Length: 462
Ligand code: URP
Ligand code: ZN
Ligand code: ZN
Image (cartoon, rainbow, N blue to C red):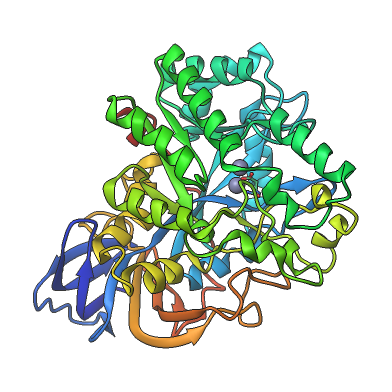
């Protein structure tokens, strides 16, 4: 059924204005003043902001850490209630298999029929045989235009050495694929972890001590140098600290195509959370680690000035009682990552827009428009413009509440944002024109998510 969103304030990445939106056949048919569409279902957005559906370019629905695996796509309706209508998930290359084969198998087994928002995948190179570097054109043809390599996690099967990163950068460049890196110095972390454990310092707090900002900054700089050698663009994921951001800023100032994101948790949570008693600190173990509050200010500023161009959730649905407790003996064994896919827009609104740190336009850019460009899906996602998918959030700025795992759909027993104040929430959300959230509740059972294929030569090449 056609829909007409009336009386709202449309917010884009560059402006905002009073306008109605006509939705037809899953697409935006018209944006304009006083539209009238006989027979259309009218959604009254008086007093609300109308935003493009969010693109979360960094979620994990299959990440495994020492035998623990996160909750999968069946929990992705939690993204929807948080205003995210497209997620980009990271898929491991299976040992002995190609990247494309691994991604297609994963899609069929774990995403199709389960996803409740639209999706695509970043490949993760875990087995850097020469054949993999010959797959780039096939990956592009299948709609996969981003690949991540893990510089961190020494000894784990998905860790990548510099030779793999350099080869990937060179091969990807020829096909217009964007290489993303998790930039932390794995060897340095390993040394620090062993020293701490030997000294009996095994509590969750020492996770941060074992991964100081310099391990992130060093790897960020190294990745930038490798990208320079390959004459390729680079995207640095989950930048957590001033030092790493500074490496990106310097590269960008020198005219290099180096880009980065940060994540919601680095903007509002700090390393003191890791020191919470009764093993509560384990809830906040993610990598890179949470930092001291001064880094948060540097990250907000970097977002405003364009040194970092997106905010992701790095959602990772490990639960606390069963999975995080694997690390009771040592922080080294605590599964890395925390849930957050439904909190990204609320965090940005409450702690960014409402505090005056970012504008509403900046929010839209960071949470939807730029991530769509970064991942090559901006031909149909991330904008409220005629012809685009009708992925739309009708946002109620007057709503007040607190963030809580109890109300969450993410399928795990905690949220790192527990008890934090929330101002505003997605009142209604449309996915390709279908109502999937109404009055803040998920109602999209009959609306499956679909793959949205990426195009090569994304933002980092432009
Ligand atoms: O701690 C994190 N970030 N877990 C997810 C995997 C990753 O490193 O992105
Ligand atoms: Zn990572
Ligand atoms: Zn991640």
